[in-house]
Image (tube, rainbow, N blue to C red; front, side):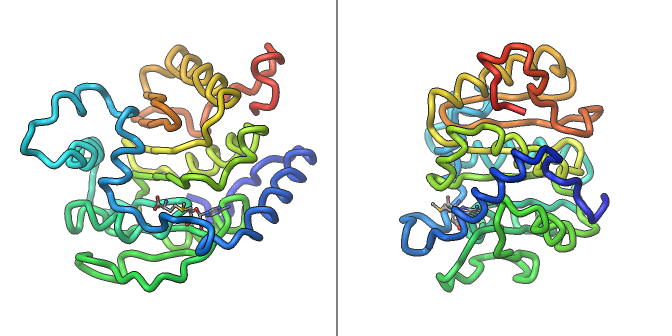
Length: 262
Ligand SMILES: C[S@@+](CC[C@H](N)C(=O)[O-])C[C@H]1O[C@@H](n2cnc3c(N)ncnc32)[C@H](O)[C@@H]1O
């Protein structure tokens, strides 16, 4: 994996929008703005529940902890490949509690990326503290991805998860911002198979486009990728043989529907 990531986009208008978004989000003070900062795996389960394959959520045995369905799905999927060097990243959160919910030692390196993190939350039951890192960085900043690559060097990223619960509103009017960031995240997925769980801002405008994207992926790449949209989130399963770059609807053939989605 190269340490110098591809630029997000060479199109000047997209670069301008990204710069604006980076500056806008950097001005917010997340510590005072957000009520939730370091949620547990069970809280993530509720955000992503409807993106799981139906067989994973119904029926959940009464005595089983509900979020175990989420943990099991992720771990069992990633176990289909070699797990000795597995890494996982949360974008938009410190990830302490999230990664603490997985089987100890399952991930050899975990990373949380967020704008600020003032709370002094110690890792809970992590077997080796240094295996979890928090990187203060902005997802709209290309150079941040070089730091991510350095921190996960030698590991295989099998899981990317993002539940920002709020701050990405501008993506609703401009899905291009979402698509360039998704491309950058997808490039980090080096384990086979690998998973990406992403919550996107609630918006009919965005939802319609993401559903179209789902149809496109299933039709064109259904054998090597699984994309399931549920509510305001999606799950992407990247299997052996999947395209190197995230396939997006970028041909603008139907401008009315796909305008802005590149
Ligand atoms: C509402 S909190 C959610 C935290 C965590 N994901 C959770 O579910 O508990 C929003 C998080 O998104 C992060 N965030 C917002 N905009 C960001 C950006 N542009 N780049 C990186 N992180 C960002 C904030 O730093 C904060 O950690």
